[in-house]
Length: 215
Image (cartoon, rainbow, N blue to C red):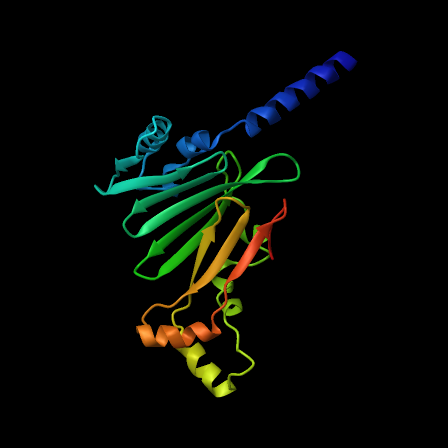
């Protein structure tokens, strides 16, 4: 009986180690096509192989545009999918030893707006709200606006009304487990953007092993 338990434990440990052994290259290649529809599995594999060869990692995607993989490290990937869209992926450590994949897709048209997703290493989607300090991306816009002490309520209301529609962009940091969230300002002139900048905030969320928490 003890021998059977030992074998089962050993198998579980090996399975766990196998999961942890997945490299960013493995995860990039195994990514479901729907996560990055313009780049299929062969194209993603070509990215990784070009990077390993020490040459510029660029391929012609399914839209007949050039996609470029800027970065591929042990825990981070950044790809310019099209002229107007990028994808970032970060492997985040969790307390039980497994890793969570955070994926940020950003679209610029021309102002940036991001979508945030979380997956396990088998590419099963996870609850993004639970992993982002209990918030949804679309709920963050209001928290990125704040009235300066020296500004009147009337002027604050005027500037706040100018931010429509409210679009949020996100950026994963390559060298730390943090997510920076900003407010975009579409449909505004350069002068109006300068005025609205007075009430804009930038917020940073740090990964604590369970979820992103505002830092």
